[in-house]
Length: 338
Ligand code: NAI
Image (tube, rainbow, N blue to C red; front, side, top):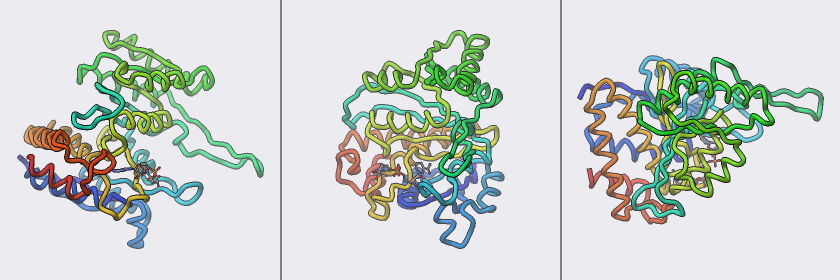
């Protein structure tokens, strides 16, 4: 295995705890990555730095791959989200979040195997807000033809490579005729002209959410604009055990940042009880990505995946999944099964 350098951003809240747990598993699996540690978020502010320091940006630009813990964003005022800034700075336009039922984790639903593809740079997340006159504020939803076509191409290409059968677009183009209309027309066009062999379906998002809750196994890939993707990701996390088990990847043309869907969880931070699995799964996604250059990363990813699957099957779980293990104890249970 070649030694690859990658950026590590532990982040805020539970970030450092789950990061330590994940690193212990990767070390035990002898994954050859030299980590370049950088700060972002409150952790960076605490060292007297900017919330997104220049040396963090430079490191990602240079090494092009990062594993990132969650970063806290103040609610209602304060600095704008570091996560959103990073996605914009590196044009990480495709967020991918696999949602799968896990053997050993009992939930209301079975056989869930969904992949959420979220447009990650436009929509209401553009952060274009202003006060029109005192007492009247507005937030602008931005959609560009380039951005909509780009994510549609990405999604259909991904579906083809992964041999997935269908893409469903959730939208609200009946009301937001221009922005969601453009998103919808772009994906329809890419489907019709280039990928007619992949099933394609469109659903108005409110009805889509109802159908999801009735039977999530009826969906395959969901393609959504930014805010819908954000909300529906957490909804879908609930089908398979919660935010502790949903990984994520943010892909651009050159850079890729891997991070769990969950946030910094201030309610449980510092208690050694957070589930490190979502970040571990994100690290596995990263290893599979690095396997494009060196297949050894792919075999390490597979060994780790089998080990955490086995740990769950053996009833080794953190509290969010109904178990009793602490963060580091779950990491140890995975290591014991490598
Ligand atoms: P959250 O995801 O941090 O927490 C929601 C609930 O899920 C909490 O009860 C928490 O304890 C639980 N939870 C989350 N991750 C868990 C884990 N690994 N193991 C066990 N339980 C877990 O969402 P919340 O509370 O809305 O946001 C907290 C902060 O995180 C905010 O500042 C928000 O902006 C930020 N955030 C950052 C993200 C990122 O860095 N990509 C993503 C989402 C939120």
